[in-house]
Length: 221
Image 1 (cartoon, rainbow, N blue to C red):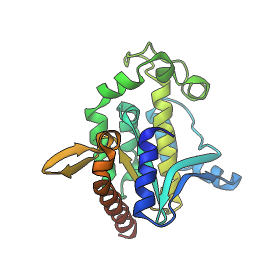
Image 2: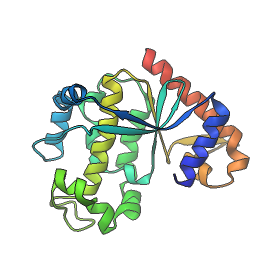
Image 3: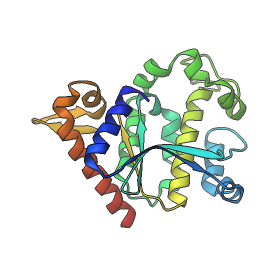
Image 4: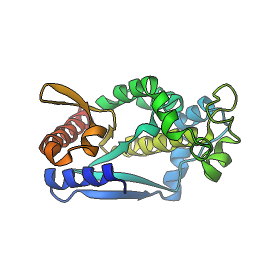
């Protein structure tokens, strides 16, 4: 667990009673089969240029608080392929505020993703990414096959969302770019988790309390 996740865990422990970390959902064969046949997953496969995608047999989520599954998204999350997945019809009727925010992050911060995940290993993504999306172009070249590793990351995030939405489980995505207003100045969540954490901790506790409450309201709406 990296430093930002450890500090989110610390904040959640102060904000909520008995939050959970690294929650894993193991899918029964019938459940996996049902999700594999979901029209939105078929749509994603077409949009990412492959003939077929399957939901993994198990999915992991970073945290759980008050029945809300919480996922952390760092700079390597936000790029054109995640943007494509967020335009999927899966999200047409959801009321979670993070959805529109993350679409904007994908349009705005791909250059930051390229700095953080433009290496050969991140761009190509290893065997699982190759098996699903084939060979990548050269790092930084979006004109051909693109980045199998980046597509794989977008696919996994989509499968997490698909599972939670279809299972009717409330969810919250928080990201490195989410803004907090502190002393009259907007500061990104990633910076606050990384710098002067003790000084900002009370703000972060209130932020996560508010975000989890908003997720519950959106879920019940």
